Image (cartoon, rainbow, N blue to C red; front, top):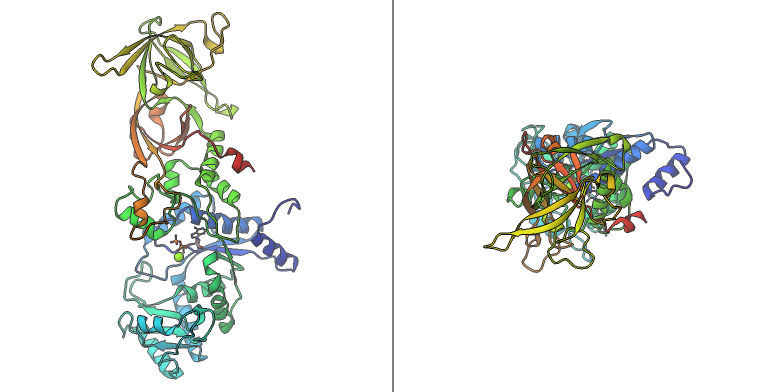
Length: 554
Ligand code: ATP
Ligand code: MG
């Protein structure tokens, strides 16, 4: 490792254990297949897979599928696709459900050791019996059942003799423990439901706290990384492993990723999908990995973001502007330039011969020599952006004005001679201009300099496209902050999607879904999978505006 590099706290822990002769690094990413992955998961993926890669170790993908009610293969498949898209490959693929038999055997072992018991109390009774932070809990009347009775009842639970909620298996720890989670936590509950992998084989399912550490141990995970709110669970994680005397995996906690203007709980994202506030999990406004993909984000930009965010030990909220900065950085280097006009105003160049067409050579990407050049047709009628003309402009307006001159990107200088208006509405319908035939290659007939450059599209060759412009899905910085009686839905931004009909240069007609471009002066755009031959649809990934450069470069 380079000595100049600043290590995050998990890397420090790893390097200490390497120094003390334990070089093995084996991490895992453990999603519950109950929804699509979001940008918070991407952070965790980059961390877990990144550490394994950096230290020559391994990272497993483990589906934490212990709750049959909410889980589905659709989610399993999407999770795998998203991890691969981010650029990672797991060493081993596992399912907590594959360990059900082993977990059951260990539960039986704990019963035998007098460390677990079947409790007949209702959920409510158990809750009340747990006490409070200041008041110890009370022991369940079933706490001191004999080992034999517990073994029999637990076997009957497995055999389906009881209804949901009739009995649970609890660890026998300490009802007065200062950490509430250690007051005889649940290990198993009864759920008569079909599991997406084990079908109807099981009707008892292990709780997260029991299943997670044991699964880590089975896979001989060395660094089990999770988010901060699990730090209070760590003693329980350790307790089960110690009592069973199995491979000692260790849990480490880092701060979860929070982003401004974003909700990041699968439950809320599911609600947005189910109730139709967005078009699906991959709606380009969603903070899901598939949403970002459809929007035009690249895996590189998301990995760069995860790197910049770093690994914190305390909760914080990251400005979504940083993520936007990362995608601009990446696309600026890689996206080819094209011209498109989103809000067209027709320009007739009166001194240009009717019917004549000439090719204008355009640079595909000034940041990348190898991207080459392309030819864009130019003719007597073109479209320019309506906002690039002002009849009575303010002082610093360097674009087109009556009597003024502007350069067409990679093309001629044009002068505005006449503004044509609809007599009824007063709306400008057309500009009549003249061009300087000696002004190609950035020059002009008499050496005069013109400041403004605007993009354009030949009207005769323009390809119509649907362009989807996105604003933030939520109007407030912290959408989870809601006044009494409200919900996060109240913070939705009603103007998060605007659809316009744009005119594009001909090359864009064949844009393949997922292909990314910079539309000159407008931003980064990505062809949507809804595009059909000759009828492209583009999503705006990000605008060009870049107020974040200074902050992110720090
Ligand atoms: P959610 O609360 O959004 O449903 P979760 O934590 O329940 O998320 P899991 O599928 O259990 O979702 O998470 C898989 C892994 O991703 C866990 O290790 C979890 O800690 C991590 N993870 C989830 N959300 C974030 C986040 N916002 N930032 C960092 N890591 C996260
Ligand atoms: Mg979870």
